Image (cartoon, rainbow, N blue to C red; front, side, top):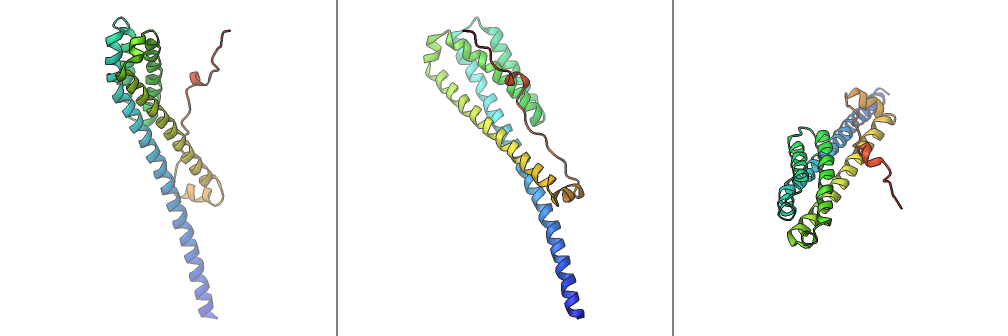
Length: 185
């Protein structure tokens, strides 16, 4: 009888230890996934910023009198590179993306520029990077969702608080991007 009771107590302790270890490891994995996805966003934003000087150089050759727009793009790139955390880099990256739209609008007025091989290559690369940034943001938000689900379900909610973990915020699109575009007919 005593041996059976001892085995039952050891089994209960082992199950409890397993549960503690499982939830600790689960929250570590989810936290690391979020850190990784933020790092991927950072990498893509940096790649985009690295392409900007080449794009500005190509466009400047065709549109010399558009210096104000070139300065805006250069300033937006500089702000992104100076950002210290991913949240501020994402904001600065959005500003850079808006500034790049101005450059692409300039290109519409210069058929020779639109046909330039270097310009087309840079435009394709930027487009591919934008897709990667969007995917990385989605992956980050999916990872945050996984963490939120694990931390709000029972018994995960108990372990989440016990281990002193913190919730993460979703990356959101800027309010200006949410507005419905006006279409004049």
